[in-house]
Length: 73
Image (cartoon, rainbow, N blue to C red; front, side, top):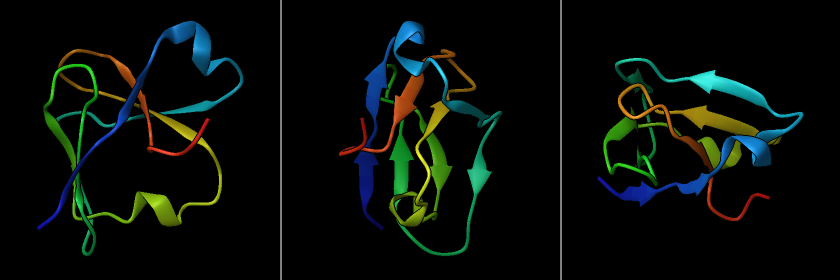
């Protein structure tokens, strides 16, 4: 399974974006695993986030850092 490290951002960079709280973990059925760009924790498993057409910020459940899918923003 592929792992992708997300792009870390600061809270002021998320202005206007919806924030997805990943909690303990988010689990999909197909796709790569996504690591927090701040702390390295796998926060989303088996999900094709790059197929989502809207830009969202993902909040890590461990460090509370905000992340974007690489290539967005």
